Length: 365
Image 1 (cartoon, rainbow, N blue to C red):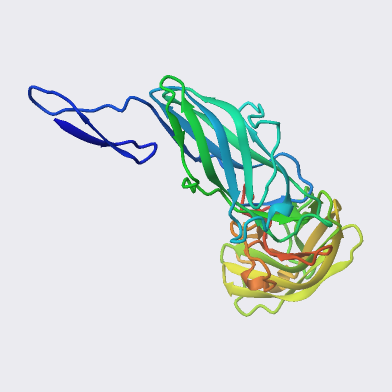
Image 2 (tube, helix red, strand yellow):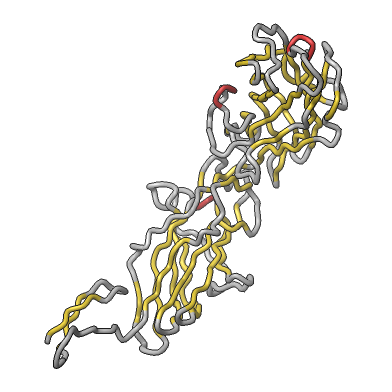
């Protein structure tokens, strides 16, 4: 009987005659299959600083069936813009590494040209019935005269060419494997916030001048200049002891100088268990500088003390999503809206964080 089948590697159809006395005929393809996909270990959406080295932007999983394959060509496309090559200036060079750090690209490195990076002449072995991982790693360009802070980089898989080592069968595609990686946002500087070791905790007494939280703010950069914080949003929680009609304020100030950097501003009591504090203003901090910032508030006017072990906690959202060009503290998911002084680019996001909130210690009144 005549059997028709489709080659899954090339999508071409073939037919062949087989003789069978009875029962169904099963036709086996005489060569293997190569599959490439974005691996689950690909880093999530994040901020990449200018002048960064060896930043992994994608991890690809390559699987082979029935025979070994050797990949001779791979291309990747920067699909962050419709205009090919518009974002090339943000990436100095690209490397393709194995899981143990061996450079798999011919010549060691490659470069974006009109939005595409080419790795040809490679000899990447994919063992049969097994898989390997390939890491796409970039160096970013300088913030001045090269990169464009505020732009993004996002890669997809382009062309693949490989040869089966048992059959000599060639596998290829024409850029149809559009597996897309995460977005990466180019910035010259970004804020980092951690809880200060001297942030208060434990038992406290109600006071008109009370410290609820101390955190360290650092301007992280490779080649930026200054970070200008525009808006702050701090959340406050309790076990139901906030006064509904509380008329009270809070300020932010530098611990070392006592300088007030934001406020005074009113504390907005949402209900007996929840309140929020929104500060607006400008606070500039230089590259690589760290400042300890204290939140002072009037706990006497805010809290209805009832029994022992009433508690209050302060937190700042670090943001699981981004909001760019938004300086309304009411919608800032990152808790802080900021601007790169050098470029004027605005953002309200910290980049991907292992935790999405900075939580202060529990205060007992």
